[in-house]
Image (cartoon, rainbow, N blue to C red; front, top):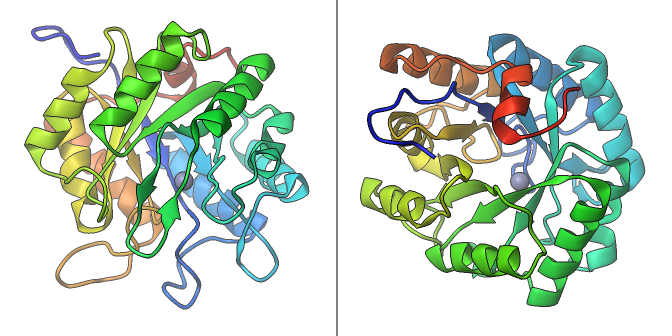
Length: 281
Ligand code: ZN
């Protein structure tokens, strides 16, 4: 948490290279094979990304929960970026059953996403029933995995606080704030300030805007002392309204340049581990 008057912590840049939605038809730059995901992660790591938020795709490029695919992605990433923090998705948008969503947790990534509420996206719903959230939180606890609490609405923060009170989540908590998708909290600066001020004291957080809002919310987060998530998962375009297609490396490069202009130093993976309370790699 940013304390007014104190220098901000070094900036953690999270790369979200793939996601569930973009296909090669939408953009040739979205990495979908383990090799492509590892290649983009390495290029971002060289520029300063210290966390990679991983989604897996099958041979047809469709989202998959299968452990073997995640295993191959993780090992290729670790080969090139030995100390990067790996954060696996447990998204249930395509495969809602909790046993599928939790399969990747057996690989004990450093972190895993945990969406602590349900919402509508433009074309479908993201359904996360209370029992599923508790089960995934428990699996992460048992495996020593830090939950990346995905917040699409301010009410999700209340749920996170409640789960911490009940012992399902261990404080300090880490949040990923996602603003500006149709059906979630909008991506106004006041919305970002409101979410950040609602977090429990001592929490760490990153923020991203979806689509056209990616860079402005990233910049707002940097000014507020938070961390950022950037990548093709959140926006396939580099700019609006020109709609020039983005590459992951271009998106990370822009963040690094903005951070420099704003005077935020970039955290190495080792420094990011310290900020997040993770063990050394
Ligand atoms: Zn994701």
